[in-house]
Image (cartoon, rainbow, N blue to C red; front, top):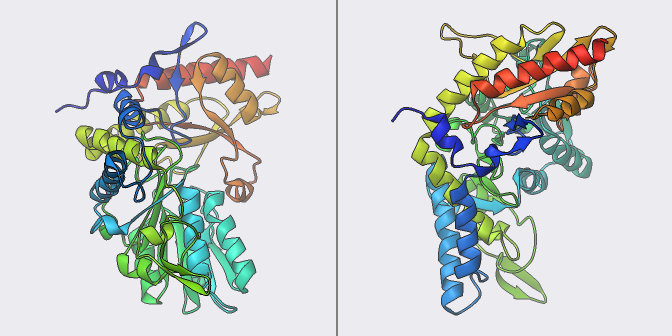
Length: 420
């Protein structure tokens, strides 16, 4: 069926809101997506009719909750093309999933070993590896970025960045600042050639792109529910089962164990080994509903819409005097961005110098446009470009060209305001 953005918007009641006299133009989906009515209703139904703890209570509600939770695990496995539900670990967000990777794989590091990330990573894919290297004496190295927002693969080759000492490579699939779509399979092949484990932060990729983790080239992939029209409070770590089975526990507590004695404990098989305590049950049920919703529309159609809307935005934004887009701006023959996702960060120069992103965001908000201003949890990337922060507009399946036009009009207003 044709992609009908107006019909999709009808599934998101919040998009009918106004800000003063302006319609809400929600352009902050890279931060957190809005939720369709069906996801909210599914969570409500669970709490109102099936609420109980999982894998513990020996009664009807407990059985229903356990079945719903494990069915959600299987649903997410299908959504990303995993080999089976045993490869799906539920966490509270992508940050926890990446910390799980850094803690468990990090326990195997030693002095002389190297971990490779990139300058464009979210802090959640930098700080855990810094901590792991501090604990073990391993060395953290990184890809730099080119002026147009790509990984500097030529410089990495000159530096022999991925080498026989490399034990882990951990990269974003899609940059949350630059929108850059990174060549994960190419880099994964390099990592595997030297025996390293390839980890992917899929927080911006899985919500936007058809995902088949077994074809991506990664060994572990982290992503989060709240960016893919699901609830907050739940993330996912997918891993090859043979790798998960080799990793030690991340947290200790109930349900991650096999047998506990005062002299020591043995641990459950994955994925439960990594899910200590009461898990995010209702959130998992909501995430499964989100996967159903996205698959009903079709991830290929969603990706196509996002490419169309991002191309439209790039053309419109680059016509604003004083505005500089960070990251790739190349368009193909159809006006679609080349190897780019739906987040556009930019700076805006006025008559008296650069306008602070927080001021831009505040004035845009006064005209109904919701964006993010700051370093977007990617301070090293901004430092690499010699700027303190930026403004980011980000799009999703419900974004319209009218909202992009509203953004452009609000930016013209903002520039005129600060040029007085």
